Image (cartoon, rainbow, N blue to C red; front, top):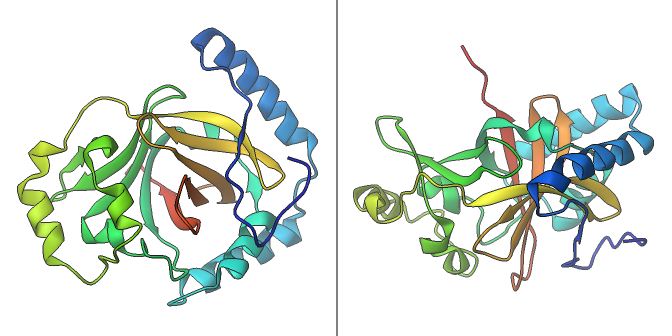
Length: 228
């Protein structure tokens, strides 16, 4: 994608990696070389971006333009960078989905490797983590009806979570070009959703969710789970 479009939704991603395991590794290496060949932020720019990120994250609401201004300034990440478990949280922009995942006790995401990804990890009241099948969740409804303040829904979800739980991978990682940069992207197996990641620092990424048919992009934060 040659032109950067700041105020218009971009719904097409150029898939760089092959869907086969044999080609995935070689294409991943090639994609990573592409990332390294691009101009990286200077240390000063990186520090400034981190500061802006912290200030925006603390606000009750940011405009979509402000969010994209920060997002576009951040560096892309490789597929390998995303491996591991990540704790998720919101990045408020006035989107209908702001706070929706937290209402249902969302924990984050888990990336075992490029082919095995768990896009929705939640936790019980006793902090026990469990994975759910996105194909069984009312994701489309969450984009239309705000649920941030309907707290009782989360408790109902925990009581019937056995209906949605799974141990199987429900997404994968690919390199895609989005808003002029090539970066690691989580693609859902069952839903037309791409979560494209940009690097805030070594343990934090800002994600942008592109859901086909959703009017606005949804932003969120992932922080690397640190082993004690």
